[in-house]
Length: 466
Image (cartoon, rainbow, N blue to C red; front, top):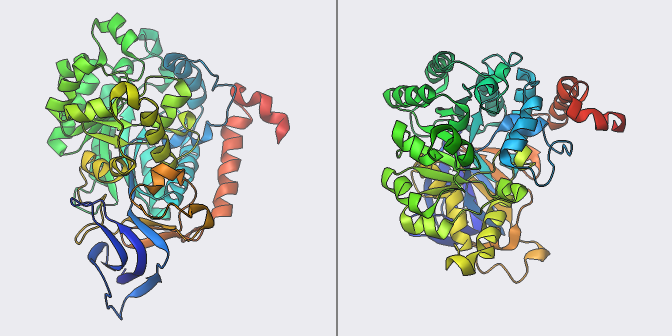
C-alpha cells in the first residue's frame, strides 16, 4: 500500500479524545495506519490526494445490519403501516425462507457498496438466515464479497433454535439445533476470525433474540465466545417483551441477566423498550446498545432515550439495521434520523445529544462497542479508515463554520467524495475500485428474480411490472 498524503484538507474532523479539528492541514498514511496529521507535511514518495475544499472524517462504524434483507425491500405486500414487530416477523419469514446462498452473496455486495458510498468503513452484519437453500456458507460468501470491495467486515453468526411449533415466529425449516449452530461457530472462528488490530475479518456470536431461541443457545454461546475471545450480540427490547412475559414471566433484560448474557463484550440491537428502572442493569454490566433509528420510525415505536441512557452510563452506538426495516444501508441517513428523533423529544427528556455527539456514536463509540479501538478516530497509529465530502458546493453556503456538526445537522446524506479502508481508496468520485458495478448489479438482479420474484407470493403483484 505504501504511503498516501492527503494534502491541504479544508477540515480534518478527528473525533479523538480532545475533539480536535485541523484546518487546511495534511494527513499522512503509511501502509494501513495514520502516521501524522499537521501542516506542510513533506512525503515525496507518497501518492498525493489533493483535498482542498474537502472535509475528512473517520470511517463510520455500523454496529447492526442484516445484509441478506437487501432482496426483501421495496415490498409493499409485506411492509404495511401499523404492523407490530411480531406481525411483521410472521410475514417476512415466509419470504426469508426462500433465500439461497447466491441471494445472500449479492445482497451483501449491495449493502456493502451502499455503506462504502456513504462513508462506512466497518460493519457488523447479523446473519441469521439459514435455510435448506443456504446451507451454512453465507458468512463465507460474505467474507468473499467484502474482500471484493475492500470492506472491513465483522460477521455476527446468528441462529434461531426455537421453532414456530413451540411458540416462536420462526418457521421450523429455518431453525437449527444449538449443537449445529455451535459447530459452525467454531468453524467460522477458526477460518475467519482475526483477533489482531486492523483485522479485516472478525466473527461475533449472535443468537437472534431470546424470544426465538432456546435458553441453552444463549448459555452455550457465552461459553464458546468467552473461551474463544470473541464478542456477542443479539436483538433485545424491540417489541418482544409481551411474549417474553407470557412465556417466562419476565422481561427480556431480566431473562438475559438470569442466564448471564450481559457484559462489556456484548451489545444488543435496538433496546427501545428498555425501562428507566432497567438502565442500571445495562450500565453496571457494560452492555451496549446499537441504536437503529430507521426501523423505529417505520414501526412507529418507542424512541430510544439517549439522554437518559447516557446519564445512566449505557454505551450507545449507531446501526442502520436490515434493509427490510430501513430500505438501504446509508449511515449518513442514520446520523440525520437519529438527531431529528432526539430533537423531537428534547423538551420531554430535558435535553438532546448535539449533532457532533451523534457523529461520535457512529465513530468512536461504535469502534469501542465492537472491541476495535484502532478504528473510529483520526490520529497517529489509528487505522487509515476515513471518508471525505466535497464542501465546495453551493448548497452548503452559510453552514461551513462547523464541520463537526454539519453531517447530522444539515442532513448531508448523499454519496461521499472518497472512502478509504485500511489505507486503500475503495471509492472515489462515484466509482467503486476494482469491480464492474454494472455487471454485479445485473447478476444480482437476475438472482433476485430467480429466487424470489418468479416464485414468492409476496412478489406476485409485481410480476407484470418487469
